[in-house]
Structure formats: C-alpha cells, structure tokens
Image 1 (tube, rainbow over the protein chains, first blue to last red):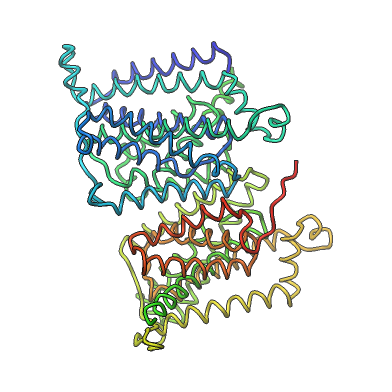
Image 2 (image 1 turned 60 degrees about the horizontal axis):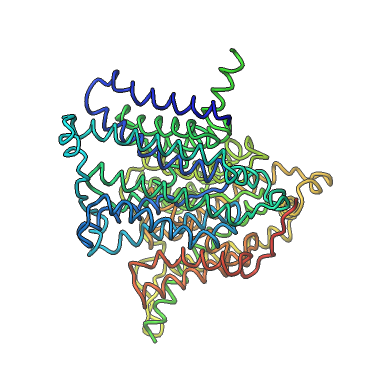
Length: 317
Length: 290
C-alpha cells in the first residue's frame, strides 16, 4: 500500500462515516452505525493477525470477554470510572495474549485454530460459571461511560445514539490509521514476509516467533477494546461476548470483506452487522446464513468480496 | 470405591462417543488432509433424525437406520459441494469452510427440528445394572459394545477388503494410489460417507443417555478433536485411546473437582497436549516441507 493509497482509504472511510447520517431514516440507525464501528475495530485487529501475519484465531472473542467484563466489573470492584476499566481490560488482554501467545503461536494450521478456540471457550466457561462475580449466563449491567454528559457539557446536545456514532466513528478511524501505519512499518514488512513463507523470512533474519507474538498481542488489544466498547454501548454484557459464535462472526466479517486490507474487512463488518438488522427473518436463519456465507466466500471468492469487486472495477476502468 | 467405579462407567460411556467422533476425524484427515470441524454435526444429525423419524411413527430400528443414511448423504454432499471445489486451498481456507459447514448444518437443524432438547427410549429398557455398588445403564453397554463393534468392523474393512486397502493407499499417498489404479476421488467420497455414518451411529447410540438438540455438534467436534489430538492425529488406535481417556478425565473432573468446569477439562487437555507433546500419544512427529 503506497502512502497515497492509505490516505485515500482513510479519507473514503472518514467521508462515509460523516455522510452516512444524511440518509438515516431514523435515529435507530445511529446505533447500528455504532455497532458496525465496534465490529470494524475488532476486525481491523484481525486483519493484522490474519491478513498481515497469516495466523488464524478462532478465540479472539475471549479477549473481547476479558475487555467487556473488566469494564463492567472495575467500577464495582475497584471504584474507578468504566473508562479506566476499558484501559485495564486492554492491558490485561495484552498481557494474557503475551503469555499464551508464545506457546500457541508455535502451532500451525489446524492446531493453531483449535488452541485459540480452546482459549476462547475457557474464557467463556469461566465467565459463565463465576456467577457470584459476573452474574453468570444472565449477564450484568455496565455503568455509563458518560459520553452524553460530555456532549451536553460541550453544548452539542446530541442524543445518546448520535454521540456513540460519532465517538465510535473516530475510534475506528484512529484504529484503522494505526493498523495501516503498521502495514508500512518495518514490523509490517516482517509480518508480511512471514505470512508468505516463515522459512524464507527466518533465513532473512526475521525473528518469526517475536513478530507473530507482536501481531497476536496487538489484535488481542483491538478485540478487547471492541468488547469493552460493545459492553459500554449496550450498557449490559453477557458471557456470549466471549462465545465461540462471536469469534466466528468476526472471522467471517474479516474474510468476507477480505482479510488482506483494513478497508475490505471493515466493509465485511458493515455488511454482516447491518444484514441482521435489515432482515428480521435473519434471526431464525442466522446460523444457516452465516455458515453459507463462510462456505461460499471461501470456495468462490477466496480473497474476499472487497478485492474481488475492486479488481472487477479496475478491469472495466 | 463404588463412587470411583461410577465415575469410570460414565467416563467410559462418554469417552466411547468421543472416540467415535475422533475416529471419524481420523478417517477424513487421513484421506484428504482436511480436519472436518463439522464432524460433531454428524452426531447431531444421527440423534435428531432418529428422533424425527421415531416421532413420525417409524419403528426405532428403522429410524436409526434412516438417520445413518441421512448422515451419509450429508457427508457425501459436504465432500462434493464444499471440499472438492476447494481442493488445493490453504489450511486456513479449509478450516473456515468446514466451520461454515458446521454452522450451516446447525442452522438447518434449528429450522427443521426446532430448538428443543430431544430424546427417544433406550433400546433395551431403562433399568440399570448394579456392579460393585455402581450402576450402569443398559444403553451405556450399547454405546460401549456398539463403539467396539465399529472399531473392529472398520479395522477389518481397512485391512481385509480391497476397497479398504484402496482407502489406506489413498491416505498414504494420493498420487501413488492413483498411479496403481485407485479411484482416489471415490475413496475420498467413501471416507466422508463412512465418517458421517460413524458419527451418526455414535449419536444414535448415545442420544437416549445424553439427549440431543440442534447445537450439540460444536462441543462434540471440539472434544472429538481433542481426543484425536491426545491420541495422535491420524492414528485410529490413538483416536480410541484418546477418546476414552478424555471421557475419563471429564468424569473424574466432574466427580472430584467441579461439575461446572468439566467442559473446561477437554480444552485444558488440548492446550497441554499441544504445548507438551504436539504429536500426541500415538502420532508421528510432523515434518515441514519447504
């Protein structure tokens, strides 16, 4: 990606975020927009892990669980603002990823998939069972982040959904900008090198284990932040945030849009977040549709929707 | 003592189901190099289709046979429609495809069968036998002996019949097998259908004890995978031992430590095995070709 391409991509994303509210028929759409940006943030982290470094994870919702419950629990346990809880959750997720990353990332292919999946499910089981702390399967309420009060203090007078839309839009832009910078950095080059061939990267002096770990920790922090923000947006959290299906949804969003680029993956997040809201029948057929999309995209559009569409447009132009 | 015996009985029963799922994994993995994350759905299809046919008025034996046929058809279609078109794709792609298949089948089952939990009567009564102060259900014996029969049958098929030897040849080296006239595509299809039948049979035998619903597949697939890995990926004997061991570990965890965390046992086993001895108890160490 050339620097100009990066600026163009960020500009397009910023313009889309800024202009989308013009076509919103009701304020409900601000909420959907904010949800899209939350998922977009998590998926941006997965692009660093899948797209840049070529490592799969089926357990990143585990980090979202850590982030979400750190945010929900710290006001009660530590007496701090939920915003501090979000930061603590991100630090904790990063630490956990750092500790389990080395042994897990020695694994490849199926083994890596199953090990990460096992990690995610262990987090889910723990959140589900420690009900005196987490409320168990029923979940627990989350304190207000105070965005609405902030907007009022600034004299903006936006509704809660509107504030969240703009706040998340900015968070996503910053997240995407950081990820794109990483792509161009020496670290990004090392990640892309080990993606193509670990052996080749190693012979050129890339510390493969270290760079895989870097990608894993960064993506874990992204997932943790997304989990925290989702909890704060919903003002409620259940163990499902760490569930297997949540991990799979993020993977599908990433590969649907195209794991190779941040913009593509965010595009995938937008489609899969908006679709269930648009189709009310989606609820009943959720698994069926999700599974079918996974199979079809992987069989017919292996690079994802976005690169395939981009190539078609490029060819005709 | 009788308490320990009780845990052993229940552990072996559940372990036999895991062993069958692991055996199904092994068959497909050997034939195609694909780890089929939809393996647990075959167990679910076996149990659910039996429920469905039995409730529709079919005799139990016919319902069971019908369920196995349905599962084999699903296994056949899975290979034809999803795995064959993706031949040569990367491992990550194949993982996402089989997980997609698993979620898709779960979604279909949810629409067709509904969300409730089902069971049907045990094959030979519900009155438990008492052995050494512990009890064992007649259906548990069905599971244990049924599982053993499948292992013996599969072993005879693979070592004594010409078709079975062709499957083994395909597993060992697809190119060499096709050069000596084995139809390797047909052997792949056969592996998927057989693997589906084994999974469905596990579901058919175990459902009167474990109950079934549309979403039991994922957990079973993961535990079957853990069992296959514990024993050593690709080794049928490893699948058997790994399955039984995992069942025992779970039952002992539930009995002596915490029943809430019994499901965690399988995943801790996965992680420990992967970190400490990645090739499992009976597996060969993998080598990477550059």
